[in-house]
Length: 432
Figure 1 (cartoon, helix red, strand yellow):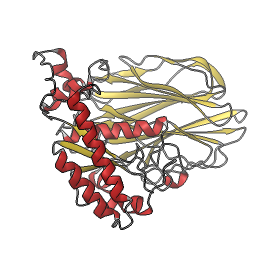
Figure 2 (cartoon, rainbow, N blue to C red):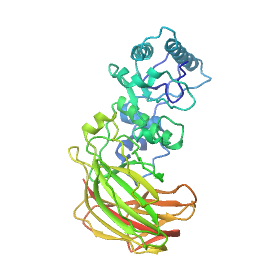
Figure 3 (tube, helix red, strand yellow):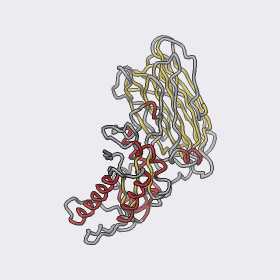
Figure 4 (cartoon, rainbow, N blue to C red):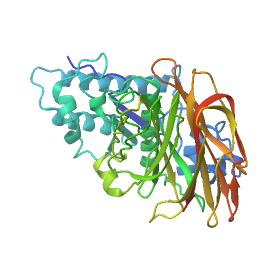
């Protein structure tokens, strides 16, 4: 019997629906601070978390997102109608003479779109191993072709890593990473359906995708979150560790170009190697991967024993070209430390973003912070600790600064709140 899970059914975004008897949303005077939100979205120095999402949609599109009140009679009727339509659809899926899945998808589409013509429907891709829910074989084998003729149904594919690896954030698994990837992509599908244009920064490249850190003793498969567009630039950060040996191989993942690499290794204890790669997001990649970027497979090179990977996505002001990596600089320490001199570079022009990446081995999964001296106007994009198998962990710290005119960025000190082993710090200059 086919049982669609909460992660595999159609998700609907309702906008501009005027229901008889529904309470009228309160009006808001123009000129309120939220009216400028769209121009703020890519300003990393502002905190916008307290602005209600419904007001973001209103200011971006003029359409209202109406809350559902389970005690309201009209809303109860709407929920009941949705439930009835879904029940009927499941009943048709399970009928003994049920036709091939694409036809059932058309039936589902026609039933729901006729009832709610102003809704936007999203199909969340499912797989044969979606947890705890028996799925008809033709459901997952035909879902890609099933929506070819249904352009108003938006597809959300969350398993763009490497399905064969069975990693936790693919296959609609209910894990924090899977929910994060799904949530960001569902959000942008809704915004796209509301004709919200993806904003480009006015001048300085902006961080638009901050992927989770993938930790493994085997092959890594990191992914970027958010919703990329053509001419975004992705940076792949790879840190591999070894114990008491020397680095040999450093394989470049398919589709990526190596930018720079630095090894901090004394040959005794844990050594760390940080490598940065880049790739252009183009229309061909997006078209071939359901509007996402291509999957990445990152090898753990022998004799390394542990691998950490992460993808950052940056967007520039030019709609016809990606941000460029103008230059890099790096510094590291072989052995244990909690304070060391970082790298330095002089930016080559105006409106640059300088990203400072610090990674290294820590012996326990306790919170560890990084304080940089010399990163003017720096803001913390992300600071996290990732637990690996066993008791080892990796510090991952990403900070950045906007540099409006040519200047020297000199990290005179990298201070960590706990002892870190063989850390590496990179400065990456990005230009639109």
